[in-house]
Length: 324
Image (cartoon, rainbow, N blue to C red; front, side, top):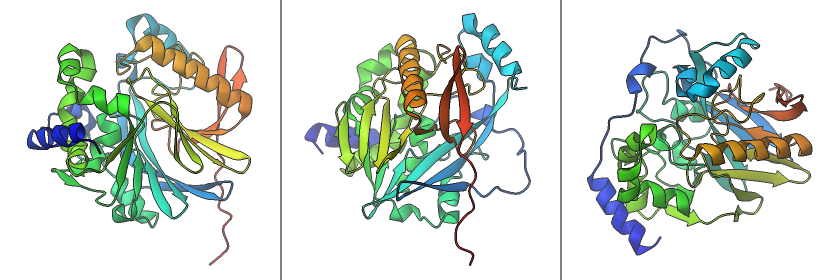
């Protein structure tokens, strides 16, 4: 943890702010009167991976698609009987590896209403306490991925180290970048102090650059465009692997068929589209599992090339443990 990040942390922690962009749209009445299980288990090789749900909500997804692509997106969505607003999941993932309990992203916390912020409950339902999390791999610093790191300035994962691309944290703690930002991105800067700030000030943030080995079996892969430091994390064990792709998908009923469709949250629209095209092609060719933070829960599956685009092959539900 260098001196610069400690200084930033002190400033950020002192400047705790709220005002989540468009939070009101997530406060419509709940769709269900009883909770779902909120977790899903699978193995990659011999490694236990658990998908955990932070909840979800209806969202005007076409409203964040560029105007020139909205008609095409709506037409593709209609093939899946989907129309805006659509229900959008917020997912995170836990990896048990080498004595560590590693989580990929941290959900929304208190930033987006009562139907989200369920990650701690989902973790406990899966037998994982927030205190047991040793490491959190951050794909990028958007409020629906880091909002759940802290609530009211208090770290929800007090024993965790945060691992994040240096380009990413440099961008979100840069006042000049904030001044130049526009659209939804501009409003996200104010939330970094309240969510990531406590970890920065406590020295719990570790950065890496580009492609990097984070732990034996887990590698960071640059996937820039959605944000300046957006990162995939690849878990490999034996001949199996899964790539946690963060925000490579928002419009699940359209972007598989047309990966060039971008969203307003993409800081660099052209690069975000190019990253998605490359990622989809590699996943389909090599047939490994991928996990998306905004795919319908649990967000895990494979891709298959299909005409102009790709077909989503969700991971099968397996309930094959020993009977108790």
